[in-house]
Amino acid sequence: MEVLQNFVVFEGIDGSGTSTQLDILKRRFDADKTSGFPALHAAFEPTDGPVGRLLREALRGGQRLHPQTLARLFSADRAEHLYGEGGVFQLAKGGALVVCDRYTLSSLVYQGIECGSALPAALNAGFPAPELLLYFDIEPSAAFERMENRRQKDIYERLHFQIQVRERYLELLDSCRAEGSRVVVIDASAPVDSVAHVVWGNIVMLPIMKGCAL
Ligand code: TYD
Image (tube, rainbow, N blue to C red; front, side):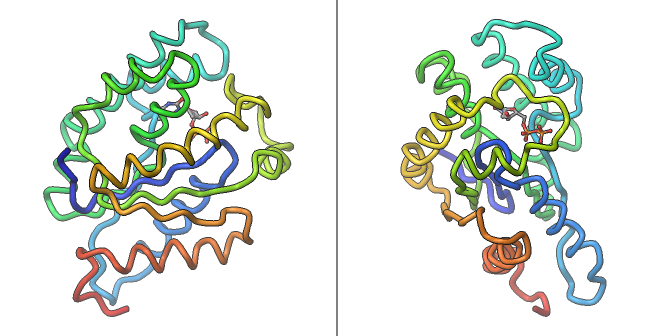
């Protein structure tokens, strides 16, 4: 499996704080004009492209789609995200640091639960692995408390489903290591600032950060 350098992925159950942490990291990069940091491109899946928008509609429950259709759409959205113009591949190869909120592991976990592991495994086999994968670990009940006052819930945001999601994540982390990604498990139940500190500690160790004034 090809490992794409300069490509980092955040993964975790719903409410584990990946989006919040990516916002914090992005602001830290943007605010610093003196340390020689590379450009940080904050990305997310599902994307805001045409397939991603359809997926978000389905996740809200507005468009009912068969789990197999969803699995195929997630991988189609990903193909465009990676290989489309200005996509992850081009950016990472061009020397930017790309950090993506969710990637193939989300499909292996969420769609794996809904359609069995074979289809998402086949649909995602060709995508490169990230150089670094940060898994934000949190008890589903604690993540649910955080999401209490959030907008309307997505189709996957049910406690008994999220319990299975966490189990699948923990089972699959070793296979990500076997594909060549460095995998770090972060305690996402800690306060936001301490989690951000751990994230930063892992980002600065990337080869692309060599030579920056830290
Ligand atoms: P999420 O990052 O939670 O978006 P938001 O914070 O805007 O709600 O992602 C939305 C959902 O998409 C989440 O429940 C996980 C799901 N998902 C999959 O099921 N498979 C995938 O391949 C991806 C990328 C996401």
